[in-house]
Image (cartoon, rainbow, N blue to C red; front, top):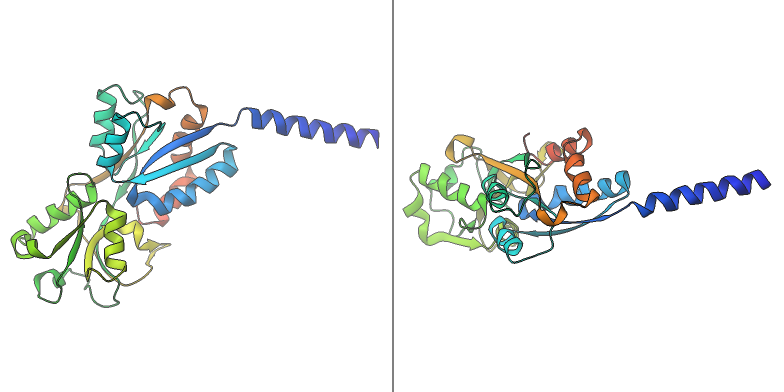
Length: 250
């Protein structure tokens, strides 16, 4: 009985000691990465003991918030240029930036069979509204506009464009039926090897600049072990499998 009590107290002491080293990390996450981040957060907390609080938005908007003193400690961007800029400006920790995912742009409709697998629907008159994210703040919006330009459709669809503040709002425009189709992140409509709803065309990568998504430990997270742990976790095989499951390349 005495030995059992000793062992119980020892286990309790070890658990308390472990929790004493647990930290919380505040993460700014590009809106396209919302679904995989929520899945990763649960695994990260379970596997490391640290806690994670995420805020989601357009990359440009998150950049402005970081510049204005937001307490974010890690930034998961939807491009590679914004983290590089933050690093140059002294707001990121040098040497911590890396590409955690390469995104895929998709033309999507909530209606099954509406979008063909070659994207020819863009050349017709079947739709009145085409949703895109703000090209100035959302890298997926910029990729969408580059695609339209490459296809020679910029002027033809100009009056049909409906602009979302970020890729999450753009998705909602299409999901609600307010736009018949729109350019979204594949991760919003894809899981475990299949399109989860509606119909989609995966935009060929040669139609836009690569969507390299970089992570960076921010200056406010320099001394936070949870920030370092998250960046290391994103490189691990378990996280990579989750990221791939949502249609990203690495």
